[in-house]
View (cartoon, rainbow, N blue to C red):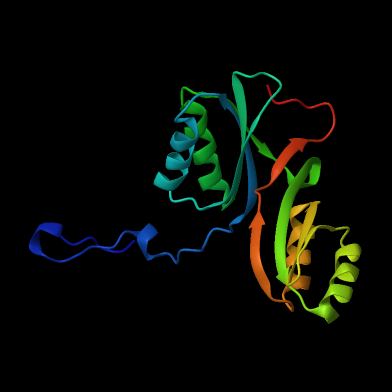
Length: 189
């Protein structure tokens, strides 16, 4: 064990734990589903909690439920297990939060919506629909110099579609966050 020096004499001391190399904790994509009271300010409190704990919110959706007094908030974030446990615990302590659940991407249905407007010319007017068909995207608007596409699907499908469109000039793009429900008979209430 290393000898500890006196911190009062201006020298620093090293504890064994401090001397060990720190291994970065693996951060993975996580989906947190919350049932909250449908009142003003609740979304701000949830987002503020994530920010105070140093979490970046990758996507956030808020939606009505079958009960008008309750809203569902779906947050997608990247976190390690320890940090995630902390944020779930802190979220559950908020008065407005009725239920918190971590959704497993493999055992939940997730969907996102993407609208993307592309610059087109005569040649691209015939080319882009083929790309859209490959991903089952819809043409929702066609202008003289632009085409707007809509696609709904799993986040990985949306990512692949955006990547396929990278060769074209994207004028505007709007992507919702993930919304998700657990597979099977499991119900969050």
